Length: 310
Image 1 (cartoon, rainbow, N blue to C red):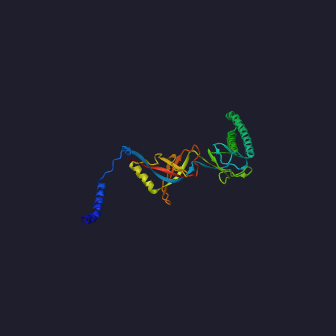
Image 2: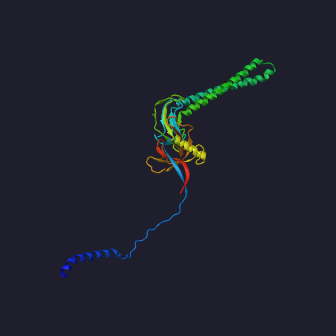
Image 3: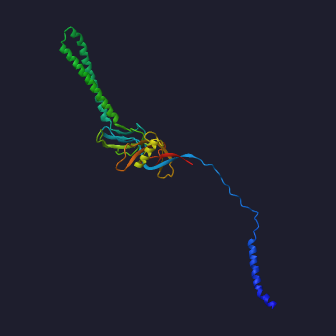
């Protein structure tokens, strides 16, 4: 009987002992590790307050300060061309020479006419000088003396007209050499040597075009709301108007990510364009290396305001 009872309780005792072992294992704490990981380093800095300039960005294009369409002032055949297409020219450089022979002949003719007029004036002056003592002795009538003086004045007028004609002939001869009116980059020739061109104030033949490079303008359009924002900033003292001061401007080109080129505002138009609701602004940039080319597209950053941020 005792053996039977032990056999019945044995499985129960085994289960109890197993559970007791599990419970005791849960209370056992693992041994502390002797290798601790390093504590992370923490950098503590004090808050900084500084002024940050806010910028507005616009899209625009570069334009030359000066663009000159070169035309001749006198007519004639193109005798020679003295520039290479697309080169840099300086003010006063010789570009075209028009056949000068007719204009040299005109100068010579004008000089001869001037000499003839001066000779007439000399004779008329001598007649007046000889007649002055005769009039006092009444050996020369007053009418005759007046005629001599009138002839002298007429001869003096002829000298003046001849001098003016000579100056015009010399000016036409000078204009037969077409020179660069500004410094800049010249376009290609529109007329080859040997062609007959027309000069003058109207209907003159186009010869070439020159654009200035340094400095250079950047033209862009701002919205009506932006203009209102700037006007209110100027009224409150937050930012002076670009009509009054040369506010800084920065531009980046199509292949650039940063605003590398710095300039300054030099013009804001006087009215909103009613068709587009925009106003035209203009900045000016130094262009010593000639990188900024008229017609380049760029992104323009203009100062909107300056505020303090922490």
